[in-house]
Image 1 (spheres, rainbow, N blue to C red):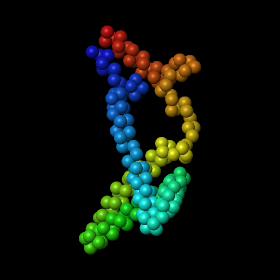
Image 2 (image 1 turned 60 degrees about the vertical axis):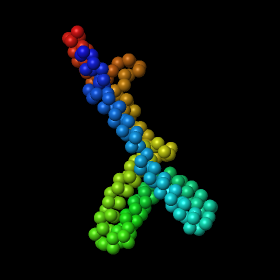
Image 3 (image 1 turned 90 degrees about the horizontal axis):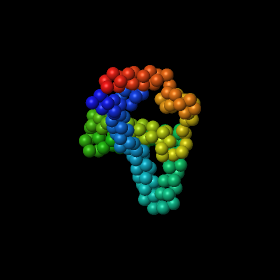
Image 4 (image 1 turned 120 degrees about the vertical axis):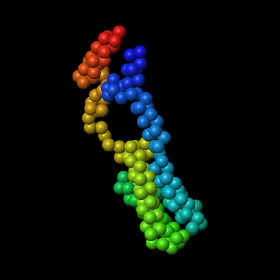
Amino acid sequence: MSSKKYQNHNVADEVPLHKHVTKGIIEAERYGSGAGLAFLEILIISLALGFSYSSWWLFGGALVGLLVLMQFKKARAALLIVFVAAWVFIAWKIGQIMFNNLGASVVLSAIALIISGALHARAYEEWNEDEYFGVDKPKEKNKKKKNQIMRNSSTKEFPPELQKKWANFAKKEKSEL
C-alpha cells in the first residue's frame, strides 16, 4: 500500500509523475498554434500578390521570400509585428464599415491586438525553440546544471541533494515494512 504512494512520484522533486506527463501532453497539443497562423498569413499574402498581378512567379517569389525572411531573428520579429498590425487594421476597418462607429473600431482593434499579439508571440517563441528551423538556437553554457538530477556516469553516484532524498525515501520504505 505504501509503495503505491511513491510509485508515481519523481524522486527529484516529489511531484506526481502523472502531472509531468499531463503538462507535456497539453504543451504538445498547443505547440504549433502560433506558427500555423504565421504560415497561413504568409500563404495568404503570397496568394493575394499572385492573384492580384496574375503571376505564378510573384506568388512563388513572395512565398519563398517570406519563408526565407522568417529564418532571421530580426526579420522574423518585424514580420510578426507587421502581421499583428495588419490584423489590428483589418479589425479597425470592420468596425468602421460594418458599424460606422468609433467605439466599435477601437474595441475590435483592441481584441485583434490581444489575440493576434498573443498568437504571434507564441509563434516567435516556437521558432526560437529551434523546432521549425535550424537556426538561432542558443548553445548550452553549463550542461552539468541541466543534468544535475541525473546520476554521474563516471562515479555512479547521485548528486548530494538526491542522496539525501533517496536516504529519506529508503528509511520510510524500511519503516513501513
